[in-house]
Image (cartoon, rainbow, N blue to C red; front, side):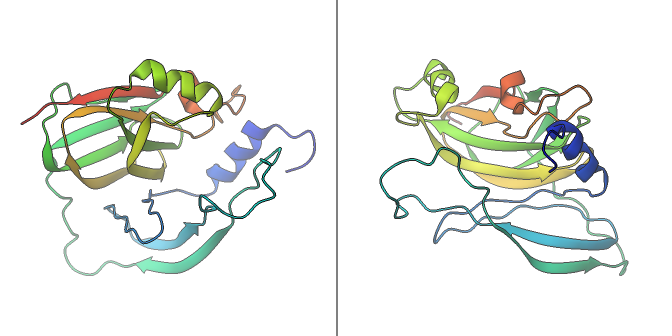
Length: 211
C-alpha cells in the first residue's frame, strides 16, 4: 500500500475484485471443517500460517507483529455436473450485519448444524469463544481494550471471511454456558477508518441452555 493511502479505500479496491467464501481454523494437530455451497467457477484455497505460541524470541514483544505469511495451497474448479448438492438442514441461523450478530433467542446444548449468513454489505468473520468459569462479559470487554493479561475465554469455533450473501455451515457440539462472538474484520466502508468491527459493536454474548 502506498504511503499515505487510505487503508479503507485500499481494502475496498481489493475486495471489489474478489469474493471470499469462508474457512475454518485449526491449531497444531487439530482439524477444522466448514461447509459452503459454491457456484460454478474457479477458486483458490488459501492457507494462513500464524506463529505458534512459545515460538523462540529475544524475550521482548515486537513493536508491531508482522502479517502472517499466506500460501495459495490449491486451485479448485467447480463445474456443472448433474443436480446441485442441496444445503444441509440447519438447527440455527446466525445473521451477520453492520455491526451486529443476530443469534436465535433460544439455544440448547448438543451437536447441531449452524448456518452463518453474511446479511450485511461488508465482509465479515465470526470468532466464537466460550467464557471460562467465573468470567463475565465485563472481563471480555476489559481484555479487548489492550489484549493484555489472561484471556477470559477459550477458542471454540471460527467462520472465515465471507462476502455479502455468502453462508458457511458449521457442525457445533455446544455445552451449556455463555459464549462470545466477535468480528475482527476492519471497517472498509466509505468513510470507514479501518477500525475492527468489534469496536462498532460486533462483540456479543449468547447463552446455551442445558438441553
